[in-house]
Image 1 (cartoon, rainbow, N blue to C red):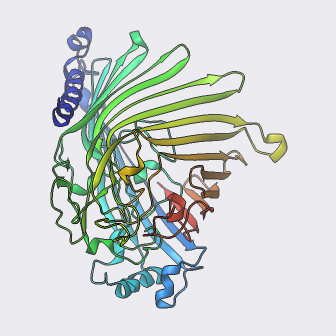
Image 2: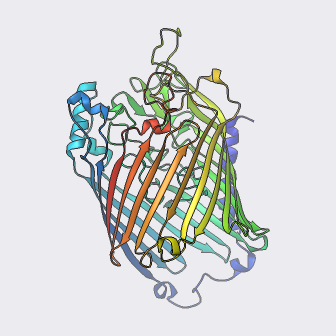
Image 3: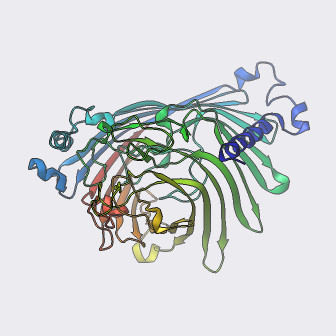
Length: 526
């Protein structure tokens, strides 16, 4: 069976499951009228409408100088990297048995002196003339628009632009791959995934099976979304969250995003099926989905992958992948904690080829920094987590026990061979390793009946060194006003070199070198 046929069968299975949701409700439910249908004018009687939302402001400031700005004799430490405002409107309605949802958001930023400096850098590195740097960050979008209808007592079907969350991990995602994330204006500081996730137009269904203590969920993505809706979006135009040392380098001048690549056409139908349930005191799930690779790879003009790129150097593409995963969680009495595990097998995860410098004279024919082609590898992603409430009331004077969590996250490249010459990330010449392991932990303290909540998160790259720390304080000022302040601090360690193009170990936290910042957020809810 070819991979194309297998993918079509995956999509067909998801379609069949969704159709089962439409047509497979129990016989007694099919014979009974919809809720409230026995009363004349029930749709009018059951009508309800609610509008809520927030106005939000962000301000962030650099805590370190960035070497890129030396080219124009500027410093970044102490400068405002973001002044941003957002307005979100969330409308809920019900007409009889049908539930409706619409969410819209408007985002606008001011061009700070720091952003002007980054635009000036484009002139020094030959990438001037592109769009304003604010095009990275100013957005307006209808984020969600869907209707959900129950069919009998067991089945609900939702159609429209929506979000689906399949997975257990927080900082890094093993199975939460239905959607990509918009990381262009914010790459690291904490927030709600619902704000960063890119919604998709889906038909989804949930079928409750109480006899088996479980539920079958399925979705179909018909391929009606825009090109920008698939995969993760990064700040490649040289903005504040482009990886060092590329701040101020507008990569969009030498590349295009190809959403019609033969191996990653955004118009293709994708979908998935997930079973979740409870047994023997454990919660578990199994999932199977066909989607697009979250992180893009470079289709290079030097080593084209299935199709010649249109960009002058390369195109960004999101090849399709198949993911099979499972989760399990349960309470441990001896530890007084909830233990969770998640594992995902990804078939045909794409990677770029070509370590070392761009053109290495010592290796004839070598094309480095990830522009030597694309190779696919199966991967195994594993997450282990322990969640526990710590009784710190006597020690720290908190109002109640403090929620804490530790996660160990590992991605393994199966059938790994150094001769494959895979790179961790294009635009760097550093090799991919067989294992990439991250350890994270966080805790939240609660004071004054949860109106003041200090928090602390920390993470370590156990494979390459480096890590992050995020101290924060969230405050409820009133029923309408919320505030949060946090610091995002990074270090690289001895095993994560910060030199690109060099075949050295410039790994995950090397990308974040000199990116430490402090962020303030103020929200007015209504």
